[in-house]
Image 1 (cartoon, helix red, strand yellow):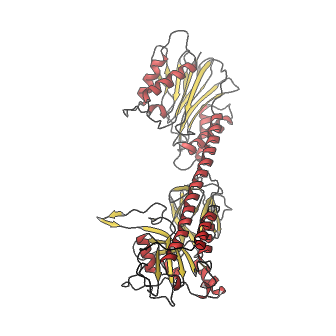
Image 2 (image 1 turned 90 degrees about the horizontal axis):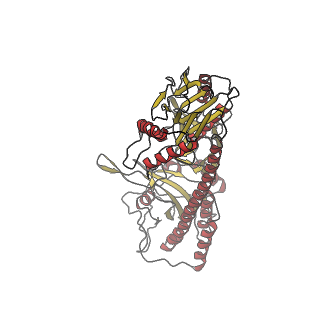
Length: 574
């Protein structure tokens, strides 16, 4: 085939790509992709997704080595492919890319067998049989070449580059391949769906020939999930594969090998059969190397040789995946350590507070948590005491908790308690993802007089505990959680009694379970606090009370794993 015709064919075999974009409460839209498309919230992005769950530069879709891929651009909420978080991932037809509240279905135009001009073999002919028979004899030179190939692959980080190196080997004069195709073959209902993983390549001898790809050979390899050899001549020895490719314009043979495991169609998960209506419905896919060869090398030795090279490729793929996972884990652990250190710096610092004794504890159930606890001393002498619980766990909740820290530490401290909460609510409503909210309880008090105000925004009740073992609930008004749209927050006047303990806490206490599965609950927390608050003179330090409360909680929980962040704040007016 003349070089110009080959170039035109390869360009035709790389179909344009599109994404079908969907999100809640928005109609689906279809957008064409350029060879590098940046997706983000910024109006200057190539593809703008105007939503707070999407970062300004969230991800990019691009062509690498003839394959489409997606790369996360250190976005706030991350990028997923078919539900799995990724940093960079090669894309297949119908892969679903997740970016915040949006899903984008990746589509290749005419991604079907028509792109490859597959031969329609006669169904009644025996087409392909798996390799059977004696072990092949390999020359020392070819064996050494394949072993060196495997060693070279271990030094190549990109799968696209490793695939090109496999093409180099198979098209080399020593092996004599004419054409190499890397294909993704899917079987749902109806005809096979076949797409290119990268542009095909030909040797100098192959450029003079039109590539032949057999539809029935692909179907057989998909069914058998093992390497096969085919020939249009059918003149193979009894121990070789039994094949007929009747539409080939000239004598040709082919070796077809799986490049990866059989998997569920449209995903990266291993294949399983689904039962629908009492019958097994198969939906499977596989990546294949399809090598067209002269009929003179249609032998079991060449099948074994190319199969060995493909096994080297698959081993390099597995090793690269393990290495990438280890590197990803190391990056994740390092980032989590930094996040934990940052969160620890947002916790209250030990300082003298005139007229108040206080202590807190904060134990995230993961590396970082979504609880927020703080004490701020204002210039007017009043003290602001806060506890909040962000809906959710882990990094996203921790980021919102850090926002709360910033909001209250930069607020105008002359404001009333409702004004402070209202400012925080307005900010959170414009920055939080859809469905996120924060429960919060706060006191603003004069430590000397004990006079102040209390607000409760959908949080757990605040307990005031006497030394006699009784308790009362501080009224914080009837307010919604933050970021759900309440227009006006209201607080309630309070009077703190001298030597009375005030307990603020999160649902990591109330939802704690013991080995029997029993939940502690609000009543259990209240009773536990009442027992611990009983004391004679002199009054115990706040840190001692916090230690005894933590020990009581551990006694209740025993070996049961923590299901939520555990946070509490204890205050006593002297």
